[in-house]
Length: 101
Image: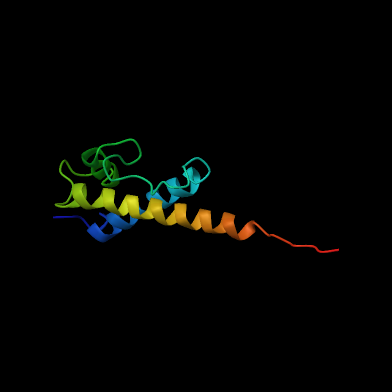
């Protein structure tokens, strides 16, 4: 059973999403315009099992059930959110002014 300072399952998933958002915001300048981001097979260069252990901060030998499956999906969702947000901001900055003389 988890101790009082151990993060909840939901908190671990939110942390995965935040890590994805941070990576997506950074990667926006490098990703091709048709890229949707990671597919859940690698997160921060780690396999899903390694990523789940990273989120648990190696506090336990075995991450909570389902974290290995779900955390990469939350990471990918956060990455895609940040990528989309950065692209929309870039598109909004483009101002076209037609001047007729």
